[in-house]
Image (cartoon, rainbow over all chains, first blue to last red; front, side):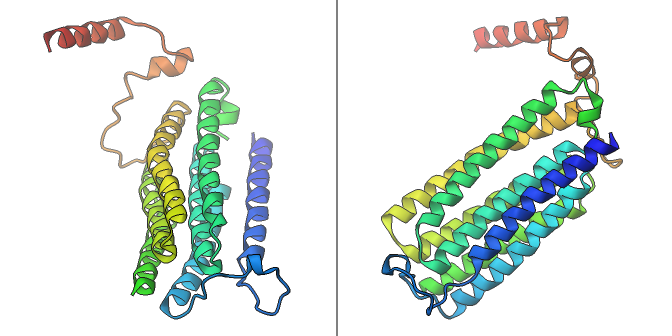
Length: 142
Length: 136
């Protein structure tokens, strides 16, 4: 039981950490000097209070994702971990919406939509799984 | 003006998101955590998508962001209900300060059997509902 619990924690944490690395890599503001095709240049130049609000939002959302991953690590139950990953998906949706405002790129809204869809499907699948295996206490109460 | 409105929407969504994360870390129970995540997460995502709508002011962005918003608003209660039911049937521990547990008597048999079977109570309830429907 302890072994399966540690394996599950390591798997959850690794996947979420990969996600954070990727999101931080793409979350850096676009450089003006970097060679880009004109298609991907930001259409709207964001400045003033909106820019500071976007920076504050991105920083705080990153910290919130870290807090939710702490719950993924600590959660005494499989259901707690699933709820925490649900919150991680919501936070990533907010991150993508905010970054679409920063970059002036509309396509991130579509990415947020698909991410919400996948989070719903994953949550429903894991809920059905927990209900199916509730005779085996080892998987549920780990 | 539009920038200030969008910034206020972003900050409001951030406040809701941080509330959800702090509630997820601090609340004592699966069900209270689920409460924090579902409500605050939905409102936070909605405010941020509204900020994107206000900033772009475009028809295509508005349509897609409203689609995402409606999808989250529709699916968050469903997923929360399913994961709460699975957690209860998987014997997630309740908080000590829980006032009452409505499923305590009804679902002990369901847990033990592994699946719901037609019992006398169910047949009785079904008969009552049909009689109510016919009366209505």
